[in-house]
Length: 286
Length: 279
Image (cartoon, rainbow over all chains, first blue to last red):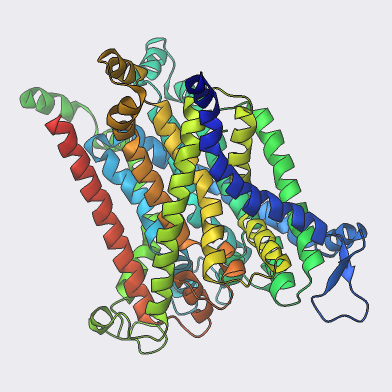
């Protein structure tokens, strides 16, 4: 009898410590963040002292003041996601189907740049694309860009940096789902007189959709909340919502606004993600 | 074979042959470009670790091995590295244990609340890092806990758990259930089956998850920046010194970590192959 009881309880016992941890350090903070977001400064208090007044208009103020940065975050994140998909899909395809014995080695190479701190790599891009690097003078000499055009401190640099940084997050899930495809399905399609493009459109791509969904989410979500690329590769004109939250938190100690912005960002992302998963029709991710 | 080839080739014009080769290898050419894009900044970082740069490592001034001989030469750089390794190891141990337990529960058992458990695992991954970092700091402030070493460890465990669960769960899902049934048929009890069949089969997944957790923790900046207070990790050191110019020693450490990680992975594959062969 007791044996049966432990058997029923076992999954819950396994879950308990981890979920207790996630409850305390993930759920509780989010609830607390929601509370902070409706607070107002204590009259006559020091900077950074707030009291709960259920001031929901914080959200409206925070949003209207930072509409531009919100829009920019989502546009930049979308551009980076599309670019990363365009680069990562052929890469993952080549590793899955064309690499032969080199498969595992190439897979390691995709992850390997992770181990050089991503900040070092982002700063390396800044220096490569900067005034003192060799790219800008060369392009100017050939005449591809104008004499006064710069590559750093532009939207282009920020999007390129994000594309670069999240590329492995896109490549790995794509590879995982492409690798699972039985090559015979593609052969069969060829036997039925489909050309290469039709086979890709009707067989390979649909079968790799779980990877496309997982990869685009793993790229889009961190990209939308990122502020490091914008801080290093951008200028004050390319500030994203992450930069605003960071400066509200640390420089202005305006916790309620930072909280309201964080919450709005999280809600916007969750809504987009839910719609996207519905539309893409895959449950495999979760 | 060769003769036949020789006989057929001249009938195809050179231009068509080239475009045919191009068409057949387009995806490979594309992949080479992809890898070049991935590795340009890595090579740059590596090259500039040999720069005789003095304080700011911006312009190439000449080749030197001094930075590699004296990686702790720049102030704070090794202290920051030490913090990152300590935090990374602790976060890896705790998140791997907690995450593996959850993965077994979700991957192995049908129970009430399984799909909401999946959701709870997915949510931290769907939350932008800045929100995770900011909300956790707010909580610590409410309880008057000063940001620093342990709050950072807690933050890292929190965001690593989900990645561990997903990785280990995938491995559990790919197990052949017949292997465990065979063990049971051979009169192994549940504990023995788990210890001698299930666990060894899942072990590579757990090792992969641990490696992933360590690299996520070691490289994290956003969440760390919120919760570390005056403590400086290696990414924070790089970020704050970026304005003044990063010392070449940071490039040395970045490059050394890269080489070390490659060696570990290659060694792991080698061991894996030997285990397979000896079986």
